[in-house]
Length: 327
Image 1 (cartoon, one colour):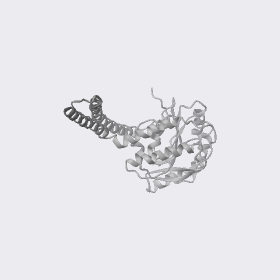
Image 2 (cartoon, one colour; image 1 turned 90 degrees about the vertical axis):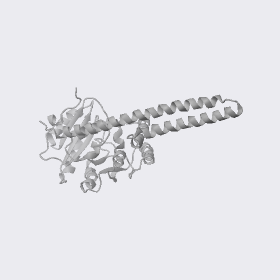
Image 3 (tube, rainbow, N blue to C red; image 1 turned 180 degrees about the vertical axis):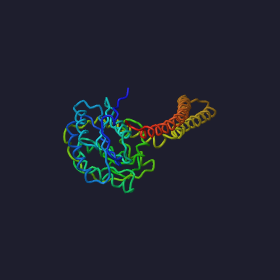
Image 4 (cartoon, rainbow, N blue to C red; image 1 turned 135 degrees about the vertical axis):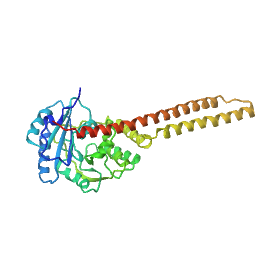
């Protein structure tokens, strides 16, 4: 059973096709959404570019569905999609992307720590063809500043990216989202992955405000998950297309070490008549592990081919879904 409600079934379409789609993941944000949507309406009045806002209700248990239903009736630029159960920001962004009609997408939270008035500033460099992706650089007091510094410091050490704040509000071309892997929590590395594919990335300062209502859904328990995800992204970028380079080279190195150690042990045995048991244990271990790693690399190559085919099928499916007429 699908976990989504069809956006067009509950939301009126704007008169013209929007050029910018603002994707807003929302989990239990009933207190913030009325003001957020009202500020969006004020901001868009002064813009010549057509905007739409797509709020993805990620399995909220408060009054968020009711509040959104009321807001949709009074704000024609607003559209909604609902997950029946919480699926996370990455899935919410992908759901919003599939429902969006704009060529430029904007990721913006509903908690009002960032005001909608800054959305046009994020979009402007893309509209001017000066950048493919623009991220905000937090200006203000941030309660998770220490964690953010660690995350951004590790990211800059592992990845060559020209920005300081990798996990923040951002605007980007639709093609960037089409290239993103469908992985939980990998939205944090959208800049890294986009830059690795050759898209241009820039940043602008964006003021940070205290939450209007509610509390943060993220805690210190996310740090180990974030570090492991970071290592997974690094491996994906370095060896995802050619896993044999990693496992094959490691396997070949261990195998060669085992052969050299075995030849040396044979030389010692021939010269002195004394066998070195620990050397023979090392030889067996190296040969065994070397063979396993090399076989793993070959298996990884087959998986890489399958993944490439799946990415192409997903791209074609996304195009078909986006172009399907709504009723």
